[in-house]
Length: 503
Ligand code: MV4
Image (cartoon, rainbow, N blue to C red; front, side, top):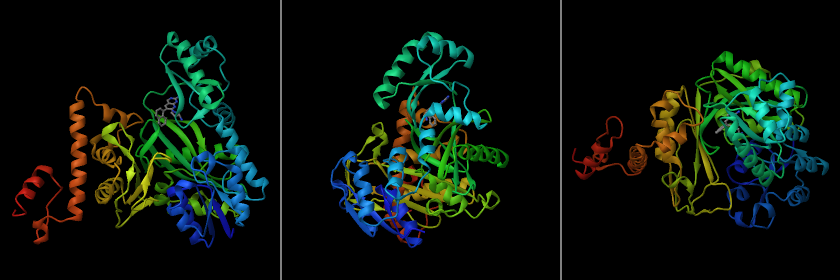
């Protein structure tokens, strides 16, 4: 095993890796930008190397600086976290060329999966069910119209270099093709410098379900079941859970097998996620993310496996040492992302100083964050302040526990999307498991009853604050030994409060 590794990242994922490394007796080297002098990851690491520079390009994305920091400090390996350089095949190659171990998949696998046309072609050959469509680029609108006849409308025009939510255009009939094609092509060129487009049948109301996989360097591979990631807006996930309500044991086995086939076909090593669109009881390969994902903790809670530990063991050439039959799913886990944003202002980023922070706790509650009191929340980095994760014996218990944990959470100084998450957790369709990737956006819009939507959001925030206050400052009646019965009810509550607790 390694003695010392460098973590090429910041924020909660840097802490996540440091924690497992420490448990394994591995020292960590942190790197940090000018803006991150006081960041927690620099304090929790054994060594912290200043990269200088305030923009990501001058710091966390500067491959030369990162590799130099590893070599100077005697690190033997680099863990990229997620984002930044984590899915950059060129960086991964440079790391290994510098004589360091790369805690991630082989660069060739990153490359294949990074190109959506090449990955579709590979997956088709591997016998992985893909969304119906092309495995070659389509050059012009006329060719697109011709190909679309064979695929069937509606059609999704996608960029080969896209993925993760960038560059997708929907076409309902041939007459719309030309203009959509030109827009998509222009966007692909400006966003990726690569205008190649391909076509897929557009699935109207899919669920986004992904499978966690792990492969060693000795031909071993296992899957850790699925995560349900449909509660998102504009490709930013808000709530993830494990398992998915629509996946039974048989389907889980089938999806897992397909995900393993996908990984084996590209000689995958380490942790990865195979994304599927699920519609009408069928699943279709969408893309593979060649990194550890933000939402990995829900899988950890349900399987009891530390995925970072497995990543480190694999990178150090250890065999997994267990098989699929050893992976057991137990109970249910939910994650809520805590983003510095304002749900009542269209989820615009919220900035400020974190003057107050109270972390939830108690049984089966986990808060993965690098927040600290006094932290400046600006626009330099991702607005995700952390993740709240709970486990329950079943989904109902996990939902109740998450509502309780969110009520305990108090982030003062910036607004967060937590009230929106609470509104989802209380929505009857979410509770029933009846939702798809459009759920969150349709909840927000809710016209022509938009007034109702606003009131619901305001009520959620009110209840959230109320519950928070209640937890912090028990009402007089409770101090006097009275215990509130049932759920916090808002009318009841304000009346009692004005009564001065004389109830
Ligand atoms: C689709 C689709 C429906 N049909 N492809 C969006 C991000 C990119 N990675 C793929 N995406 C989609 N591809 C076909 N053929 C719907 C989406 C999609 C989506 C997928 C996963 C999670 C959230 C989403 C939100 C909107 C659209």
